Image (cartoon, rainbow, N blue to C red):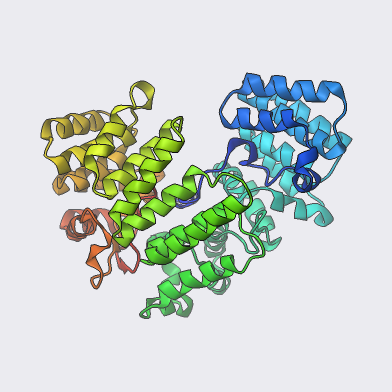
Length: 494
């Protein structure tokens, strides 16, 4: 199962714009004197974010051709050119461009740009080799890479155990923390714990567990049988004490908030963690602070932050505020990508506006009508009593069961078809690439003292489903199901 649970758990991390998904920032000098940067570079970066790679290539080409760029702008321009070439399908040219710039001006940014291009064109082994080949004095360069990029590289090596394990050890023991954080990411640390267990280093593995703070990773650590040797160890048994798990998550939240600077991903992670442990009111407060900061810095807050605000409002019981936030986002940014519009529809559905969700989902046709759209359509239509529409969506999902079983499962649960859902969950458990998604969905994220947190009563449906003999028998070879003090939001990333 190595790597499979990590991919699922990592999906709670907010998506980053394409131009900065791999490289932490533009060069420092560009960042501090942004007004001096060539405007064509800014426009090229925006074009890449929008998938307009030909436009991006033309813009950056003009800037490079004039030859008036500063050294730091030239570094950035090289990355943008390589990224545009990669988007145009010219992988070899993209790699050559990044390599040439690194050879001309070797520094942390150009090295990270090279790794970014390796990842973009799916040459992960070369990226891994470049990280492993770093001299000790230059290893700090790796912190320019975002955790999601590091995870992509590590996950791609699951068929090459020796290189993968060497990379995990180098990153963890080298204290890789990413561009904004001060600690090893929990997804990477969980891989390291798994490696230590395979080496039968139980005490070392147990010590590593004391640093894990993310709710999804804690859930995996406590339920996936890959970590069963640790379950009776004092370090993990201590987490069974009342309030211990929540205290661990809150410790991580506080550590994030004490950082000198928080990125947009940090804000989202903190808000999501608070929401998952049932502190939606605090998530709202932090979200409002982040929005205020964005306005003061005259930068857009971004759809992801506003969506997280809406989710927190919904879980706080302020459905009207969730609906208002979602509708404002649609009105102010009418050209939102399909994936974001689906997330908005999810918020509307969670906030009780099933009709609004269906109207929005109806605008997504053709290639945009994905399994996620069908799942939400089934759930919203069911709540409105539009059963023919619900049944049509579920029939379409059943036809895609081989490729989209998680969406089919969620649709069956939200429409009350628990017997069918149990069958689908059992099938997911048998597929290694889906097992972690199934294990996390089969946990009882329950707080009996606060049953109102799940507006659609998904908790009750899931509790009954997980308690069934069919699900217990299916999950037993791979995991255990226990009551965790989190909400179902942890099992269904949104």
